[in-house]
Image 1 (spheres, one colour):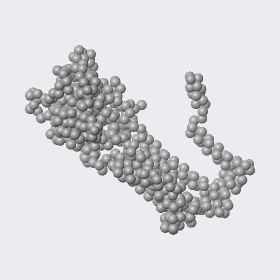
Image 2: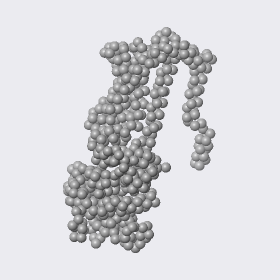
Image 3: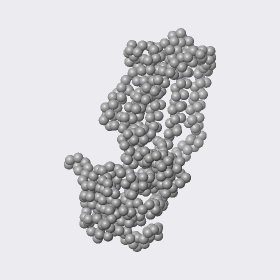
Image 4: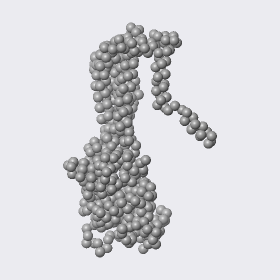
Amino acid sequence: MTVAVSSLAEARRFAIPPDRLRRLIGVALLVLWEVLPRAGLVPALFLPPLSQTLVALATNWAEYGQHLALSLYAIAVAMVAACGLGIGAGLLAGAIAPVRRVAQPLASALYAVPLVILYPLFTAWFGIGPQSKIVFASIYGVLPCFLGTAAGVQTIDRQFLVVARAAGATRWQMMTRVLLPAAIPTVLSSFRVGGALVIVGIVVAEMLTSAEGIGYLISRYRTLVDSPHVFAGILVVLAMVFAFDFLVRALERRTQHWRRSTRSADAP
Amino acid sequence: MSSVVPIRTDLTSAAAAVEPAIRVDGISLTYGAQGRVTNALENIDLTIAPGRFVVLVGPSGCGKSSLLMMMAGLRRPTAGTITCGGRAMTAPQPDVAGVVFQEASLYPWLTTQDNVEFPLALRGTPKAERRERARDKIALVGLAGFEDRYPHELSGGMKQRVSIARGLVQDPPILMLDEPFAALDEQTRMSMGNELLRIWEQTGKTVVFVTHSLSEATYLADEIIVMSARPGRIIDRITVDLPRPRTYAMMATPRFAELRERIWDQIKHPVGE
């Protein structure tokens, strides 16, 4: 037993720290992306080398930039709609039990539906302009925002509300001064999931039926069998998603200590 | 004296002229549905004179915390009435009774200053006055200089100090504390007891303090209300005649042991005795 424990500790001492390991894996993938096609192990049509992809991106940067701006606009609008609505409704459902009992199962069921099957309908209703993809992505992102927030409000320390009541808070004050701030960490987590889905929704919609946006660009270059330009588009989408995730995580870190209970007997 | 006879616990003629700070009249509390009704509290009568330090003690599950929550207006009794400072406690009255809970339950997104100001902010007290009054109470509980710290930066004892300051910020005549030091380690608990006594002596509040610790009860109280196991009833009311200020040395005196023993004798019996 003690031997096993000490050898485990030993192994841990020589192990690479996880964050460095993650970075190493990232670098290794980039190197493989360059090396595999160059060595002829993967046909360049399926996977053009990283350098070629970057060159394609650099030579057509104006086109990519223009379509990226159109996508970002659609994403911003959809995100405000989806997350505003989802978080607002989630707060209500979390705080008011009858609302929750009706809305939560409905939203869960809807969440399981692959909404992309409805996209052709959206284009029929709203045309192939930005409206249809904004509506589609909004619906795509609103559900996790709603479900996450509603669940998050449920986990709020009930004692917070008792304290507010003892201090003479009205119902409205409990909502705005206790429930809302207490829910912020979980709201951010659901925003991270919902926001990412909004990005996915916009790009997918653009790839299916659209005349603009980064998804449209990917899909157009694919029909031209121009792999470097397809992958350049994919790189742009990846960069967008990572940047979003990074930003929200940074926000989450700032509210990190709200998650930790204040109720433990002694702080370190 | 220690016989388990329901006794009328109103104060005797000496204090009868003084309007009681707290009056509890025929309080009962039952919960559960038909068939499985639990009698948590049965016919509680109690008056507490202003400025007294009164401790409610009893075995766990005797309903002492429920009784305190009802006194604070945070819970409705099944029968009976409670008035504090002449006001019916059918809802919380933060300007009459400040409440300190077992867990400090400070808001983690607020600093010490803002946590203490919180009850004032709810009433719309002007910012400058709020600052001033909160600062006063923070100094009173010995936390001057910690106004801008967040709860996660404070120790357990410090959090309870903030919580006491928050309870006092509206200057209520009554302070109610529900096992406030139960989660603290023994040393911190003892020194927090002394701190509370100091604050009580400085402010002259009426204090109602719930605990399950017999030593803590004896050390702090003017009067100890002893409650029986469920259904909770008041089975004794003990006047603690140890001199003030209380010192640790008193805990080793025969009188202290005697008082402690008297409580223990009454609550050690199993339920249904």
